[in-house]
Length: 241
Ligand code: IPE
Ligand code: IPE
Ligand code: MG
Image (cartoon, rainbow, N blue to C red; front, side):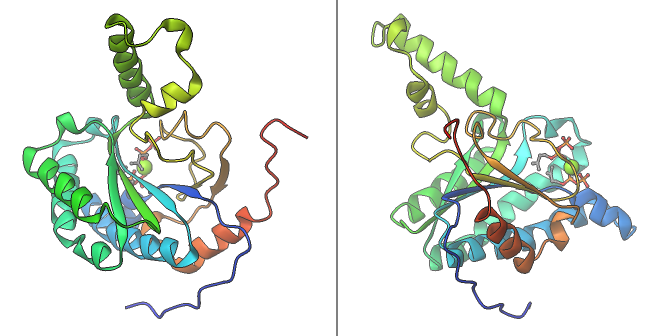
């Protein structure tokens, strides 16, 4: 067990933090281990950072866990990631004990029925918590999400529920998987890659970014505190002056 680190007093914390959990494979490779060991280790980081988000007073934290493009990976790696989701949803009870609301975003239709049921149960049993919401993006892709929103709005136009002239950016936002969740303010990506990889491309329109070379399994609570502290120094203008 890592030692508890004092919770810093911060004047400004982002309302919604997005985390692209990257570098698990390289972490394992460096140790001569199969990639799945990196994913297993990455889960420990994910748990610690979720808890920290609540301690820091962050209202929403979204973790990118599996992208719509990650199906391209070898079957045994995909299978081991899916098995990890199932196992960890059994253990998610800890989050419920800590009063963290859990939600999922992404296209669930490609996931196993067992996993989907666990996802529904977890969402249901944590839905009354209001301090911190942890959102896990599984089979999530920003382009897929927008495409899905377009389909749903088109249906409404076809049924006569909505007129084309009434389509607004707010309406599109409400048809995304994130629906009522506020836009992402701050995106943290470890592992040295400087790209979004199809993560929240709509919601990140005005996001700030934080990149670090640390691989996700090595990313500590102190590293997270440091990233969140840096957010306080950013000057966000949203197109104004
Ligand atoms: C991120 O780590 C986890 C997933 C994409 C599921 P990677 O598996 O991408 O690790 P690297 O980038 O190969 O090191
Ligand atoms: C992004 O990481 C997806 C997740 C962290 C779930 P990838 O490792 O899949 O991204 P690329 O392929 O390097 O862009
Ligand atoms: Mg990667």
